Figure 1 (cartoon, helix red, strand yellow):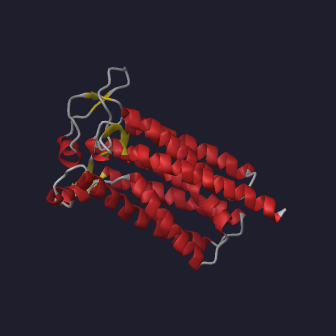
Figure 2 (tube, rainbow, N blue to C red):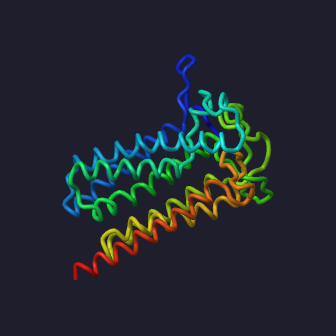
Figure 3 (cartoon, helix red, strand yellow):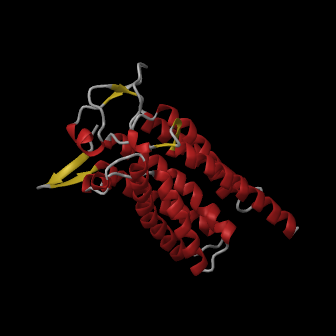
Length: 263
């Protein structure tokens, strides 16, 4: 793969950063288009998207550091420049992004349900594209694999940045996750068009993302995902995935009860 897209002297431009930028701008264009159908101003959607992106980047890195410290990684390593350059724990980004989202949405006096529904399909799209960046960088790598579609990383930069095992056949779990995110995106886009209840797209995202991530953890092999309560099966992704499912169910209940109350 290609962790480093190109170098300018000693400054390296990573492929992950490029994919993150591509995902963001595509997601922003889609969010503005979906929001337009509900009468949401394009300027407010742009402000929301930028705020969510910045908060998401910070939140992903904060959760990554928390997981490292909780699993015995020395503080000097957890806060090192090489660690902080990594993408981070995506669910930390989603949580921080959601908090920033509600803050900015209130500031712009936007309707909750419609705004949430406009941003969640683009979020799933951006995640799917971002995972291709993970694949290029070698981070979030999989366990040993003997299937014909196994991948082998050979670039020393992947080992340097992410500790990726080189010359070992691994599950391309980044591709699995990307396909899962893109499938979630397709489902949410269809749901948005038929939308039985405003707010249901937002709730469905958390249920599908939580379920999908819990399944994807089966093939994750990187130690950065963390283990909780001494249980090997209970990784950070599975724990947050379970909480996502509960939150999504709560949002769906709110959306359907809200509609019933209005009727």
